[in-house]
Length: 639
Image (cartoon, rainbow, N blue to C red; front, side, top):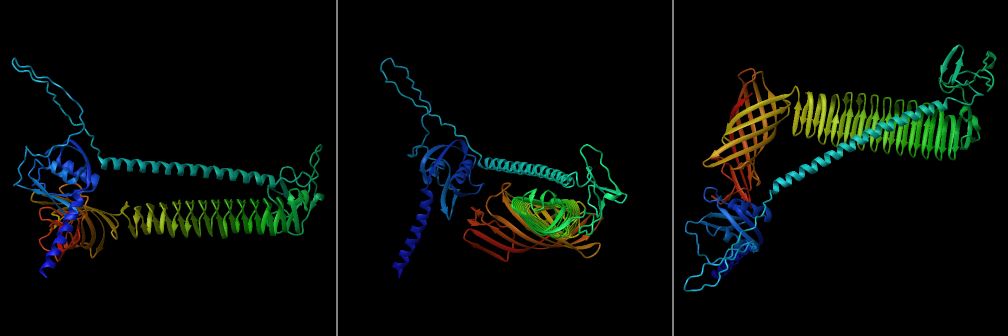
C-alpha cells in the first residue's frame, strides 16, 4: 500500500513538473535596450500570453534591462532578466509568480554568458609599445546594442479600430446620400412621365375633340377632363374651328363619373397601337377582355387584360391587368395590377399592385396595398399596406403598415406598424410599433420604438428600446445604454459603503427606468482601487418626501491602475429609502447585496480575488475564478 502511495505522489509531481517545464521551455525572442523590468514582463505577456503575478512593493520593477535573445526558452530568458536581482520565480497554474529572494545575491562572475545582439561596430586599437617588450596588437571589440523600437500595440489597435469605424461611417453616409439623390431624381422623372402621359392621353386626333383638349357640357368648359356629353368639332387644317349646337352628341351610358362617354366592347386584340381590332380609335373603347401582344392603348378596362410589354388605359381600370413590363393608367384603378417592372396610376388605387421594381400612384391606396421588389410611392394616403425590398414612400397618412428592406418614409401620421432593415422616418405621429435595424424617428409616439441603435421622438407615450433613446418627454420607459429625456429624470448621488468607501453616480432617463453611470474609490494600505460602474434603476414614490430606489449596478474594480484587463467584477443590488430634506436634496440609506467574481491573482496571498469586505456568506474558488457573496449597506445624499 505504501508503495502505491509513493508511486502516485511521484506521478503527481512529474505531472506538475511537466506542466511547468512546458511553460518555461517555450521559445521566445526578445530585444530590449534601457527598458525597465516591468516593460519587459508586459512585452512577454503581449507577445506570448505569459501571465506574471507579483507584488509591486516587493519587486523592483524600474530596474533597467538590456537583453537580446532569439529562439531561447523562457527559462533562460528569465534567468538573464533576474540574474542581478534578488528575485525568484515559480509556475503556479497558468501564472508565473515572481517573489523576493533575500538569499539570492547578484553574481557578477556568473558563468552564464550574456547574449548580445549582432556586432554593430568593431574598433581595433593598438596599445603603446614598451621600450623593452613588444606587445602584439590587441583587438578590442566594442559592442553597442541595436535599438529596437517598442510598439504600443494597444494604441495601434485603437487607431486601426477608429480608422475602420470612420471608413464604415463615411461609406454609409455616402450610400445614404446617393440613395436619397437617386430616389429624388426617380420621383421627379416619374412625375414628369406621368404628366407627359396624361397630356398625350387627353389629346385625341383633331377630328374627334377640340384641339385645345377641352370638352363642353352645356355652357360649362372642363379643360383636360372627360364629361358625360360632348360636342363634336369639325376641324379643318385651312379653316377656323366651328362648333354648333347641332353637333352635340348625347351619350346613353356612363361608367365613370367625370369621364367622356366610352363605348363598351367585349373583346380586343392588339399587336401594338394602333395595330389592333379597335384601330386608331382604341382610346374610345372599354374592353372586357384585351390581349396585347406587345402593347395596347384603350379608353378603359372592365375585365382582364394581358400585355407582352405594356398596357395603357386612358381613363380607368376595373379588373385585372398583367404586363411583362408596365401597366399605365391615366385614371383610377379598382382591382389588381401585375407588372414585371412597374405600375403607374394617375389617380387612386382601390386594390392591389404587384411590380418587380416600382409601384407609383398620384392618389391614395385603399383596400389592398402596394408590393414591389424595389420601391412603392403613394402621393396620397395609404389605408392598407406597402411592402418593398428597398423603400416605401407615402406623402399622406398611413392606416395600415409599411415594410421595407431599407427605409420607410411617411409625410403624415401612421396608424399601424413600420418595419425596416435600416430606418423608419415619420414626419407626423406614430400610433403603433416602429421596428428598425438602426433608427426610428417620429414626431409623437403612441406605441413602441425598437431600434438597433437610435430612437428619436418628441413625446413618448409607450416604450423606446435601443442603444440610445432620445425624447422631449416620456410617459412610459426608455430601455437602453443611454436614455435622454429633456424633461426627464436627472439625479446626482454621492455615498459610501463597506466595499468602496467613496462613490458618485449620475442617473438619467425617466423615474420609472433610468441609466446609472458610477465611479468608486477605495484605499487599502499602499494599494488604491478605482471602480467604474453601469446599471439601471427605478424610483417608486411613496409620498412627497419619501421614496424607494431600486438599483442594479455592475462594477469593474481596477487595482493600482485605471483599468485591469482580468475579470474583477462586483455585481451589486441596492434598495435605498430616501427622504427629502430640501427642494432639490434627499438623503438615503439602505441595504445592498453583493456578488463578487474575480480572476485576478493576488501574489501576496497566493489566491484569486482581493479582500473587499470583513464578512461574507459565500467564498469559493473554482479553477481560476473566485466567487464571494455578502450583504452590505450604503448611505448617501442625492441632488
